[in-house]
Image (cartoon, rainbow, N blue to C red; front, side, top):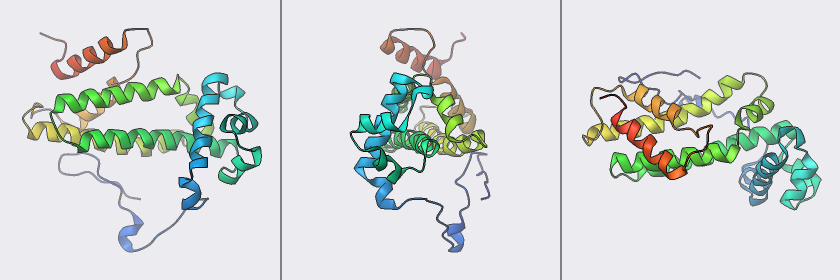
Length: 215
């Protein structure tokens, strides 16, 4: 796939082979299997086991027990542990992106939408409890960076849209680079390593992003 940039220098969607009428399906299981409630229950059970036992303690039988299904049922949806972890990362990442897209798409003041995006981001980071990087490496040991970058580009485009709409409403400084502003929001909106009151942290983060720190 070729990637290109628009006139603002921001990332655009990759040029797909679909544009030439060619559909190549690399999906290993059926659409029905991918959307089945049981599959989602297994993925949710997986992240609970990860939080309780860590990556080294993650075993398919433990996931099956947590999901209240047989071990064989897990293998109906996932080829092996690595396939399960890869699906988990993609499932939780794109679930988060869908929530962000809902916030961006509903319109309204830039400040309110940005505040909600920051809240969603912190919630997502907290959910992984520091396991994200290790799970991603285990799930996709080859070209981990490229795989994650491909997913992150979707998030970048959502934030670019939020910033651009803020500019159009006169709520974001017009001279700011849309792409770099979106990237800065993505980079800053993470959970702090030290303990701070959650609401105070979110409000302060919002103020720093909106007003800066220098006089």
